[in-house]
Length: 254
Image (cartoon, rainbow, N blue to C red; front, side):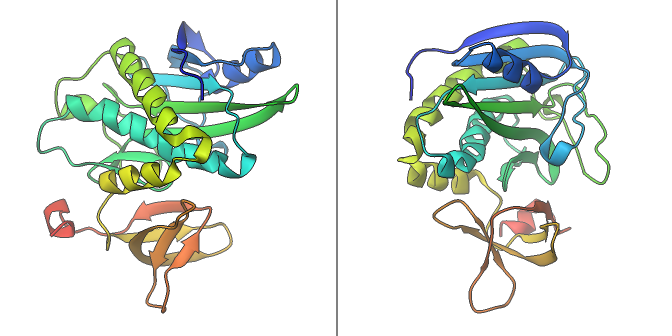
């Protein structure tokens, strides 16, 4: 992994920072590069969902070229989650329950404050990774069927420019620890330390089936472990996960 500090380019308005990253990759950009925009007109999340990106929030994408095998690229959701968590945490009051949710969400309590979209493509023989990150700083966009929140409800919010500087440093540090997948055990441990507690009730939609159970941790490869009452937890490789418990956070962590 390159130790070269990432550059940052900024826009007032853009269609999508991830789309701009792909355009630059086609033109030969290999990073490390961050792209930030005050507003996205066609921001997107996982599974093609729209992601609202109003001014005041962070809409950014990190482009870089790892030297890892494609089989470990999914681990970058955890790396990005750690970078986002550690960038947000210093701005929250002591009672704000910041937590990570598999595979790519940052929550305050049950409400989403940030999302991550990892994409990759082969450009001229090089695997280029593009990690889009949206963090609600000062505005809470509506997401159908989801609780959503923003940083400034819980403390002194940074500006998008301030937050991306910290996020870029955190990403660089966690990518070095990840080390093209060789350090995923440390990433997995750090992610679990920041995740909701074991035993948290979850629902999972894999598009093939709908499952209910409790959080039992992560497999060594990063798969979600869902306890359903069977002898062994089910390994979930792909799916949409929701927190199902309505208990107060203090009771969930008791």
